[in-house]
Length: 138
Image 1 (tube, helix red, strand yellow):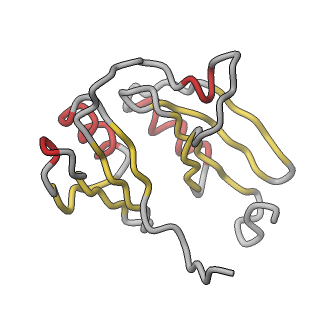
Image 2 (cartoon, rainbow, N blue to C red; image 1 turned 120 degrees about the horizontal axis):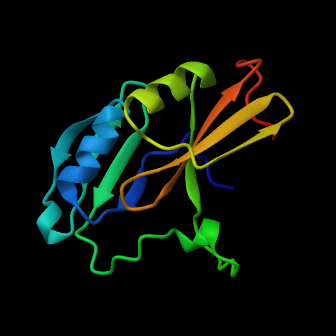
C-alpha cells in the first residue's frame, strides 16, 4: 500500500492564460509561480486553504464542454474537482457578485453542493457540510 498523505495539486489544461488566472484569482487563488506556460509548463496557483492548482497550457483543442460531465457517453476519466467551503450561502453570494453561474446542485446526507465552471468549461464542485468535523463518507 502507498502511504499517501494528501493531494499535492490539481492540474487543469486551460485555453486562455489571463482569463483563467483572473477567474481563479476571483475564487481566492494567487499565482505563486509561472514555470513556463507558453512552453507547456504550469502556472502554479495556491489558495490560503491549501489547495494548489497547476494551470497547464496552452490547450491545442478548444471543445468548450467537459464531456465527462455533460455528454450522454460517459468515458473514463477525471470529471471535476470538489472544494470544501465553510458556508454555501456565503459562497453563493460571492459567486453572484463575481457573475459566476451556478450550473447545478445536489444534496447527500449532511453535504450540500453546487457546481460552477471555469472559463474552459471545467467543472468545480463546491461542498459544504452541516457538521464540518465529520467530512465526507468513507
